[in-house]
Length: 332
Image (cartoon, rainbow, N blue to C red):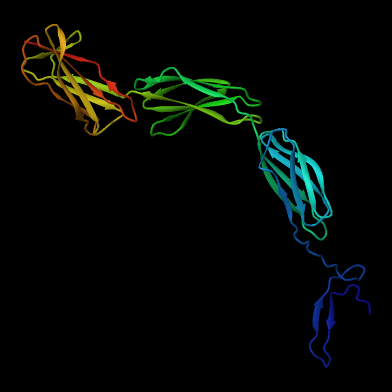
C-alpha cells in the first residue's frame, strides 16, 4: 500500500490494543521530511597593539575557531566607518589584518565571518589608539581684577589644526557651574560679567590629526560695597550736612552676601589742614543682610568735618573692596 498523501502512520499493538498514531509530514514524492541541523558556535578572536603612529604600519592578529575561511574587515574612526580588504584565515584559523590608519584617536577594527553549514557566524573587535599631534590654545583677558559685575573681555586663539577650527570659551564662577560663553572658529572674543572669582577656559575638542587642547585663565572680581549716611539735613558739594544735635549714622552692605563676615570701618577728622585718622574698626560683623554700621558719637561743633568709609578684606570668592570716602560736616 502506498503512503502517498497519508497524514498518519498507525502502529497497532497486537491483540487489538489501541493504535498509537505518529505524525509524518506529507511530501509530494512520498519521502520523509528533511531534518535541519543547528550550526555549532565558533570562536573568533582579534588582538591589536595599544597604540600606533598615524600612518604607521599596524598589524592585528586573530584566530577563527572553524579553521580556514574568508573574513570581512571594517575600521571605525573619527571620520566614520570604512570597509577594508577581506582577509583569509589559514587551515589553522590564523589570520592577520594590515593597515595604515590615517585618522588619529581611537580606531576600532571589526572582523566578521559569515559561518557555514556546521559553524555559526561570528565577529570580533579590537581597538587601537592612533597618535595625534599636539596643538596650541591660548586664552587672555583684558584685566585680572574687575569691579563687581564688571565686563571681562576674553580672547581665545587656536593653533594649527587639520579639519576642525572649532573653539569654545567657557566660564566657571567660584562655587558655580561651568557655562558656555561663546563658540567660534580659530579666534574667539567673548564678554562676560564677573561677580566673583571666575576661571575661563578655551576648549578645542580635537580633530583627525590633532589632540584636544584646553587653556585656562582665572580672574577676580571685587565685592560690591554700598554705603549710606543717614540723619543729615542737607548736602553741600561732597559733604552731608548735620546739625550738632544729631549723631551721624553710617551703614554699609557687602555683595555677594557675607553674613557673619567682617566689615572694617575707617573714621578720619579734618584738623590742622589735613585728614587725620581718628578711629579704625577692624571687624564689625555683618548681619544676616550682609550689612553693618553705627553712629558717630563724641563732641560735635559747628564746622567740624569727618570722613568715613568701609572695607572688605576679600576672600576665596571675591577680591578686597573699599568704599569711597563719605564726607560729614556739622552746621549750626
